[in-house]
Length: 79
Image (tube, rainbow, N blue to C red):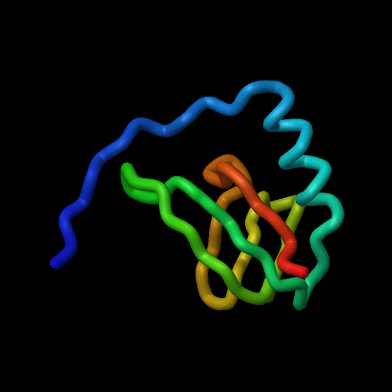
């Protein structure tokens, strides 16, 4: 079992929110993305193919991992 370091969720600055919003709008299904997100008091990183992007529900699904938009710290599209 891995040791877990509990961390508080980071509040994004307005600039970071705008950049995140810009990148999120350019993501399409089947893009390969690297996402850092907050889950159960820790930050995790996942890289994989976008299988679902639901703006109405606020969900980004990378392979089989559902991530709420509000839990995303950063996202980048792999080239």
